[in-house]
Length: 325
Image (cartoon, rainbow, N blue to C red; front, top):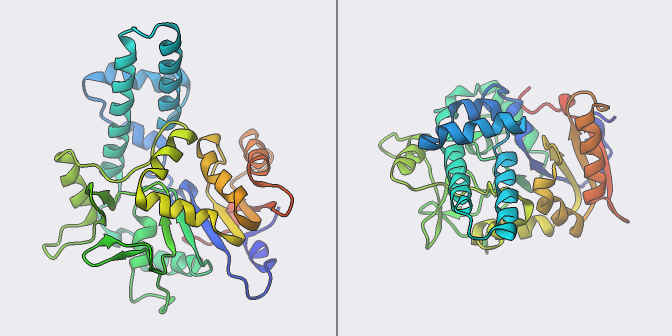
């Protein structure tokens, strides 16, 4: 399997690739924070605690999306066999509680301040990111957002356009937007009229503090955490910011790196968009033993979802990638 450097050096001279960042990008900084087990430990399911939490054990998972997907399947079956069953309403409600608990858990476990990342780590990740022209992320956390905003560190001239303009309002069209949060993020919110983003305030409120205040007021960040790729795609196409980012992914050409993704079916809407694009080569990172069951499945899925005539999928070792050095 290739190293990251070998993959980069195999690209035609003068071409600048794009990248899609997934959870492995954040886990490379701190695997203890950015994992589902930690989020489950921090989750509060309220008066449904004794019902929802045991579902994770019964299904043998820490993954919120797996549980949500099973609830959706159960709802579908009940609507077919017994449409008047009172459990249907309870399942729909529990799925909403599950989603809200996930968002709250992310906000509680997330690092509070950008300075929790060292300057050396910022330099490493900014150097890594500067190799790509268009950057897509399906992560909710702020690590990438902090890294792209960090000033005064190498590479000195590295800047990116996220499509937002004063007063922290998304414009997108007519900009040179290069940064795309395909599934939203903690810092992005929909007012119902416009899409806005959080930034540190003049009063010193951090983004995380603002997110927590909003959550206490019942206002949630823009998040795509639906249980199936069909439902995720539906939410994306019905939000102007998300749909813009999604369409941008579909307009790519050249080479795309996918870093830190398990290649599970629940993000097939992303892979379908890559498959329909003019991207000619996709490099997918593989973490750990490439012959493990999980990685064998990931490689098979990557090829099945994206490879076709004129579009080739290759793999590289995630550990060889100097993301946070």
